[in-house]
Length: 229
Image 1 (cartoon, rainbow, N blue to C red):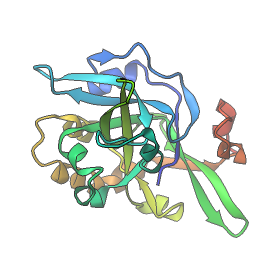
Image 2 (cartoon, one colour; image 1 turned 90 degrees about the vertical axis):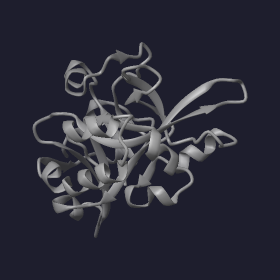
Image 3 (cartoon, one colour; image 1 turned 30 degrees about the vertical axis):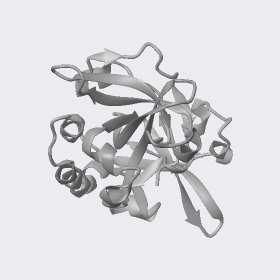
Image 4 (cartoon, rainbow, N blue to C red; image 1 turned 180 degrees about the horizontal axis):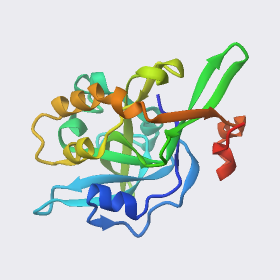
């Protein structure tokens, strides 16, 4: 699973790598402890323009489908099992039409040990951004406010990450991310399966280390959280 992640920077490197055309003026500030229901920046292609406009937008973590009665459903839908998307009413429509990429510096996972659960910070050794595969939805509130939300896809953990937790996010390299965002993609399942199969190659460049248990409190948010202990 992926229940907390870090975005220390979503700057020019990401804009260049993913060919972003438009950045929102309301992007959230860097955060070292993003939790479900918080805002994070996501990348999506808008099919309403020709050609589609690739945008970096703030979104609420936890998918809220258009048919939901209120926002609370999103607190339980911050992750989606990639293997089961077509079987779920909440995720199948977004897989077909509303795919997103979520950039991150790294993420946290809690490893079960004989001494209890130990929080680990997982990140690329070279410091480059991680790109998570995700889905997004728009929800209209009773007050007529449009809210953008997202979920992060997960798959069975591979390689060394399997020793940390049995699930991990679906990672995308730049080519897979570009294809995943394409609004003309006819077979998103094939593309997703290809990215999942490539996970061992992408994940082999990752490193991780124990961090302070303070990360467990969502009110804590500072660079100290990712420092090794």
